[in-house]
Amino acid sequence: MTSTALTSFRDLIAALKRNGTLRSISRPVDPRFELVAIMRAVQRSGNQPLLFTNVTANPIAVATNILGRRNVLALALGLDSETLLPSLLAREAWQLDPVVVSDGPTHEVIQTESFDIGRDIPQIVHSERDAGAYITAGICIARHPVLGTYNASWNRIQLVGGDHARVRMMPPQHLGQYQSIAEQGDHPLPVAVAIGAPPALMLSAASKIPFEADEYRTAGGWQGSPLRLVPAKTVPLDVPADAEFVIEGHILPSVREAEGPFGEFTDGYVEVGQNHVLKVSAITRRRDAIYHVILAGGTEDTVLLGVPLMIEVLKQIGSLAKIRDIGFPGHIFGCVVSLEKTDDAQAKSVLEAALAAHAWMKVVVVVDTDVNPHDAQEVLWAIHTRHTPDTGILHIPRAGSFPRADVRDAHRGKIGIDATAPMAMRDTFRRRRFPGIEKIDPTAYFDPV
Image (cartoon, rainbow, N blue to C red):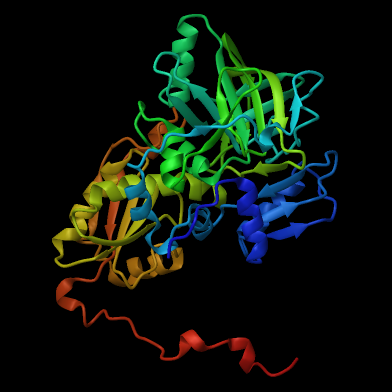
């Protein structure tokens, strides 16, 4: 059942507190390695949202793993988790114009001088070889230098100190294209970095919408109401009025500096590279701001990146068969499609279309509706018990996938795996059932210790 969307990060935190899923940590935690190590351990066990209220060296609370489950994203957008993908696909066309207000919580504290991003922003260091503290949940906002449309995108930002930061961005990413246009005219590109942004904007920033589309309008459509914006203080941009933090500044033209290494979403490192320089002109925030941290490649990152990718897959396969759901239990370089097959040829058609839906789709598995596409163990069970290696493999050799130059060749080729039962053998492959299991609490049967 759908409900009203939560239009701010703060509202989402409050909702998770009310439903008992948010876990608070009040003991002192070191922002260098310890905080992220705790988060990673939680992601591998209960995968709960976390709020750290005693991070050493900075009084600001830190929230992480907030959107680490797809059902939390559905909650934030007021949607049913079972129909999240088709609902988002339908809402993508809504495109609601934002509303600009005169003031908002993100301007409760305004720093236009005497600030230091190496002091006023929590200095979270993630991996052992990282070059230092990074903003990992910052949405970079910019306007097209000619068209005026707004782009929002996720970019890692290395915190150097003072008013100095380094940003990873380049074409074909839309923000990189904006910067390239500005740089050709020798102009700095005004940007704002929103941290703790409205959930719909987080999803929009990760989306694969066309270059000419406006991420603010897309976010409004996905949350079912206009996004609230407020004029920035030092750059000619409108920024999310309800964000926890907004960092304002300019990307300098024709300036590059060494950035990295950084542990990124494939669980390896991006080595040192020449990247863009952000000169910060203001930090604005809520009075009791909560700093948002995302682990690259962690569960929150894969939900935010994976859901838009699965929407692209659904666009391509939705007319080929009755699609029950799409999951990505391993990594976002592939997916698992649950389909209600009516003939055996549908599986191959779905595999071909899903692999072509986005360059990153490298391994796609199709399963029957009695297999949970979000559960890696269930998917492996289907491959082991229903897949026919002689006929159930679709191999596309040398096809391009993940395009990063240093690993591009290691990602060549695509594979589709049909792990559905043959139509003629449906009864033979019918799964056994255990009547009453849904009502069983095993602990109620244990003898007292």
